[in-house]
Image 1 (cartoon, rainbow, N blue to C red):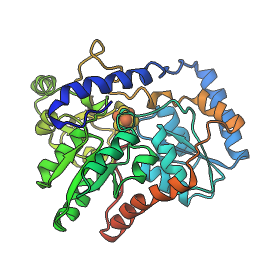
Image 2 (cartoon, rainbow, N blue to C red):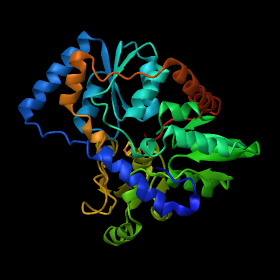
Image 3 (tube, helix red, strand yellow):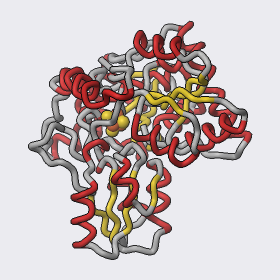
Image 4 (cartoon, rainbow, N blue to C red):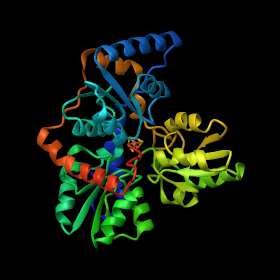
Length: 363
Ligand code: SF4
């Protein structure tokens, strides 16, 4: 349960982790494949994708094999909304979304006429879990004077209850826009991203109390020690990381902004505070640089998520093939709810087009 009292953060976080752990217990890591097994799975999947006119859209945090398969088959690798928009513009009959559940839902909301399937329906997100619709709705009802701005990492029901949906790269601009109109904001669900935006913009923001289990584990003390080993390194951090980590970072940004910064910063060594799945793309765009994962609490801490999302990891080649064979794990969003969720999603897309902003971000 999420405690709505911002003064009792530790209690509410502890309670949230109990719920999150229930989901984590079901997050089985994929089995290791031999190279023969891998090649056979890839060949079968490609054949079936062609037969069913299916396209694969994968998140940056998924297995490099899945990312490569998406690009090899004219699919797409990116963030959740870009994945959904790619699907909307594609002439595929079936979209295979390799990511977590809210991404499948966003894809379905933006592509209601297409069949959207996922390798597994068990892949979820700690931010989504920690923002259940009933409690969130009560929170909104208790603060009717505030504009409700939610991060993309939420259920369709939470999106439907909001005024705006944002991704990490457009959140600052949307909040500044609302501020300029004298609006106060109710922000959910990521407290670190919300706090970063609040500090940067000075906006009046009431924050929901949830965190990403991956970014939450990056530690500033370890990062300071690491910088002593690599004094010339640049630090790139996603704003879902704790504020003490963001204060040390040279660049704070969404996945796409991190990828762009990796190319543009002059440093040869780069410490990265986000899911290590992104290293596949980083090494492609800046092969001459040395990327180092920022330190976390380690495997003996509370997380099974140290720098890698266990739910993203569930998107294996085998599970993808299984869902494709029977067109199973289909995503369904109740049409009325989808229409309601589409309103704040479309508001963000229109805002981005009008302001010539790219709607890219993390999950
Ligand atoms: S990395 Fe964090 S924000 Fe992204 S899906 Fe996993 S738990 Fe959610």
